[in-house]
Length: 294
Ligand code: NDP
Image 1: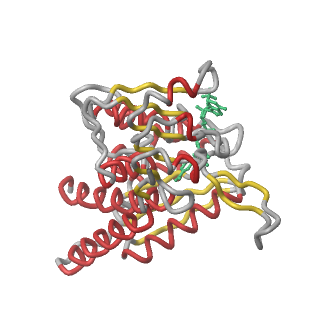
Image 2: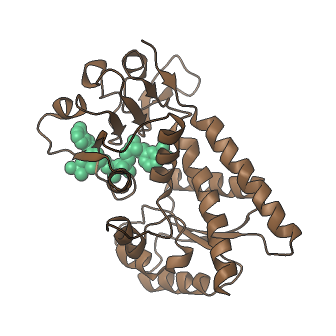
Image 3: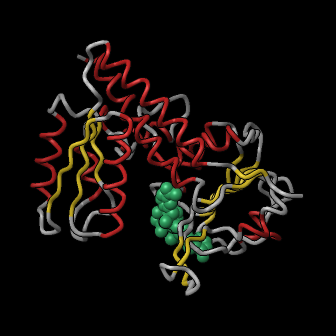
């Protein structure tokens, strides 16, 4: 059996063009373009790349983006003052604090100062709290998990009553995707570094989400035949045969698992492109929310 490859790049492009059309319509109606402010603190190279990619995506879909940079030496008060200023700026509909913050800063406190209505990354404690509660809806959902839910839908995965196994319990991927799958009526198992036998858990999964950052850990014999497999991992492995000297692989051994799974995301080109597309969608949502509030 060979899997359906879930083409995240294509679905992300579709979402971006939907957002672009919606933004054009807003502007034609005389409404302001949605605005996204990014806050980058310190010099983390990967963070700089992600923030640049987010600004490029904004430009492509017509979202106004504002870049704020603070040095790694910025104090907690300076950051919170900036966030308060952005909370009160009507041109800014969404605020994205690029994580991780440099050591010594209190991430929870920074995220807690965001306006809940501008928290496009969905990390404010109220948004995450609502996600964790039955019968409540958060205003925003973290972008990577939101993108995964779209990919599962595109793959035709049946979630209600399915057994979902998540590898990883981070605040940004593992835990929120577990909460979303629970809301979709899956029976959810969350595995982490203290789980004694990962493979015995993953073999039971109708839906398997791998988000641990361990190159190709998930092998074919870890996967139930016919499962839908979402590989969130992005790992650099040395490869002297390539120009860059490395290649990107996921947490799943793609070649062999694609012989067993019903559907699988590739790395790159699976979950990755969806994250930024969902951020664009969330920023549009934030602008629509602001229209109603003001
Ligand atoms: P974190 O490092 O924050 O969390 C990793 C999780 O995996 C933790 O819960 C950890 O367990 C668990 N874990 C790590 N190693 C093992 C192991 N050997 N066995 C079992 N569990 C393990 O990572 P993130 O959630 O931020 O990211 C995970 C991966 O997804 C990374 O490769 C990252 O690059 C990628 N990523 C991709 C994105 C995209 O857009 N495609 C977005 C975000 C992340 P414990 O809690 O016990 O420490």
